[in-house]
Structures are given as structure tokens and as C-alpha cells.
Image (cartoon, rainbow, N blue to C red; front, top):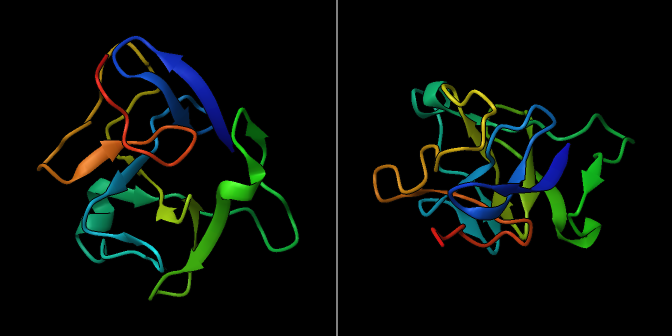
Length: 121
């Protein structure tokens, strides 16, 4: 599930069905899509699983043409937005009153429904 929602701190952002922010990493690539978050990284930054084979993801306010997936090195399939692999942070609680982990380590950024980095208004 990918929903476009208004957050208090970041404007319109992409979330999962539980309201948790979606993130992208500057360590990854959008063209071609690839993820560099492996091993211990995935304990904190959890790759967002793509819908099961043959199923389309549930989208609200997100252009289906921007949504895709990649196969990770461990064989799992990860959802992408505008080519960027998507993650959620293990500690996000689904409240949208803060900026979450936006800007963490200078690498991790909440993502907008177009795949761009969110910006603090």
C-alpha cells in the first residue's frame, strides 16, 4: 500500500497502510533501481515488500506508472517509487506529527508521492 498523505512536518508524503513514512536512501540508485541497504542496515531500515506476484499494490494519490519493484540480493521483492527502493524505519509509529527520521545520517529521506525527497516547509 502506498498512500499520499499530508503530514504536519513534511507536507505531502508517501506512507504505508499503517501511516508509517516511506523513505529512500541516497546510497541507492533509481536508474537503474538498486538497493545498497543489506545485512544490518535492513534491521533499522526495513525494505518495503512489493505486492504478491500478480497483485497490484493498493495506491491512493500515487501514480501507478511510478510504482515498480526490484529483486533484492536475498531474493525478496522490494517496492520502488520513481525507481527508488522504499523503506520504513523500524521505530516509526505511524503518527505524522513529526519529520520522523527524515535526513537521518544525511542519507535517508522521507519520500513524496512522486519519489522526490520530502522537504520541510
